[in-house]
Amino acid sequence: MSGADGVAVAEPRRLNVPLAAVVLTALFVAALVTAQVISAKLLAVSLPVLGAVTAPGGTLAYAVTFFASDCLSELYGKSYARKVVNVAFAMNFVLLALVFATIATPAAQGSVDPAAFETVLGLSGNVVLGSLAAYVISQNWDVIAFHRIREFTDGDALWLRNVGSTASSQLIDTVVFTLVAFAVAPALFGVGAALPTPVLVSLIVGQYVLKLLIALVDTPLVYAAVALVRRDEADAAGVSA
Image (cartoon, rainbow, N blue to C red):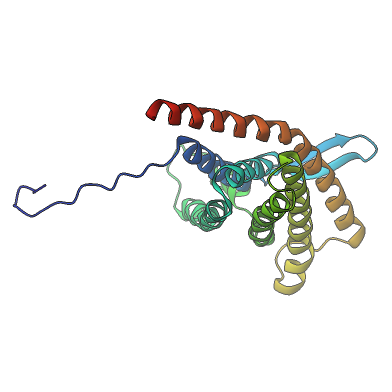
C-alpha cells in the first residue's frame, strides 16, 4: 500500500487479543487506580468477634485487583499476569503525577475548595510509600503462589489456588502496608505518624480478617468468570472451525 507521496505505508499490525483479556486488564487497572484515590477515607467495619475494625477506603477496590489477576493467571498464564501487575505498578506513578500536578495548578474562580481537594486526593508520603511497597510485593507473590499451587494440584482445585494465593498475598499486603506506612516511613524518613505496636497489630489483624472474608466471597466469582470466558472462547472456536 502506498501513501499520497508514493511512499509505501505498512498496514497496521492486526492483534488477535481476546476481549476477556482486555476487560480483565482494564478492570485490574481501574480497581487499582480507584483504590489509590479513595484510600484517604478510613472505613469502620463491624466484624463478628473482632467488633469494629478500621481499614483503608480502598480495601474493596484493591480486593478486585486480586480477583482480576487470578482470572488472568488462570486464563492467560503467569507471564501475561505478571506483565499486567508490573505495568499497572508503573501506572501508579502516572496517577500520582497527574494528581499532584492538578493540585499544584492554581484553581479557577468557582472551583471546588483547593484545600479540600488536596485533603481528599493528596495522599501523604507515608501512605504512598506503604501502598507502593505493599503492591509490588503482594501482587507479584499472588501470581507466583497461584501458579505454584496450580502446578502442585496438576491444574485441579481452582478454589484452592484462588483462596491460597489471595489469602497469602493479602496478608503480605496488609503487613507491608501497615508497617511501612505507620512504622518504617515515620522512623526512617520522618513522614507520617508512627503508631504504637498494639495499634499496628490491631490494624493488621482487622484489615486482614476483612480482606480474607472478601477473598472467600470472590472465589465463586472467579469460577463464574473463568467458566464464562472459556465457554465463549470454545463457542468462538467452534464457529470459526
